[in-house]
Image (cartoon, rainbow, N blue to C red; front, side, top):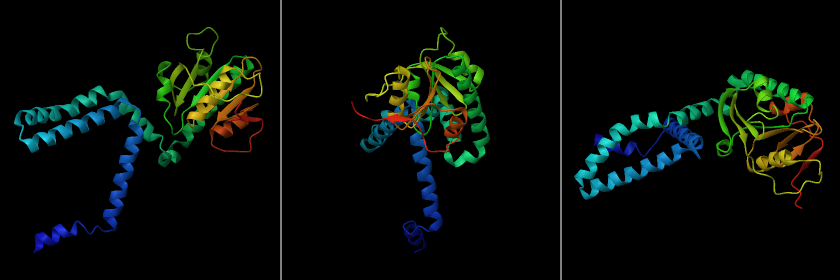
Length: 265
């Protein structure tokens, strides 16, 4: 009777088992979010397909197919680590940006915010147009592919150099993820809504367009007026000063002024 009781015990999970199940489910969900819209997702689908073929080969007693797939699974994991090393590194970096680990990265985020505020101030004083998109929870990889890939730490000097007139990457957006500049010269989607102020140009329309499709914070420096604007959640806040910009980057949502947004034309 003991083996039978042990088997039935599996169907009576305790609090510890339920807690463990929740942890595993949360980790799997987080993993799916990390690999969403990447080559790793395509690889996962391929592995599931091969697993289904292997299971079917066992059922039908197709020994040749079963042995071939066994060898493939033995060496496939090592090959996957080599081939998808960039995606794995990116996923681990994103894991480090998780909200659960925010208390450990708050100092680093503050330093990144200071560098961005300094760069925006330099660009505005020099009347150099710029657009900087800061990735939040929604990945900006789709838009990073439209520009030139970079793996540089965020700094005021780097951002100012990228947007220097006539430089190869000045015409387009810079995409920032964490403390890294992921891409420069990226093309962003333009908003489909009309803007009541005709002085707002393509950069502002692109900033609004990206903020409508993602949760990114998009900073725009006007080349004509030197004014700084910030687009979030489909709305554009204008005349943003240094302290206000630092508060936005720190997540302090004080009442906005001069807000434009979603008004269909």
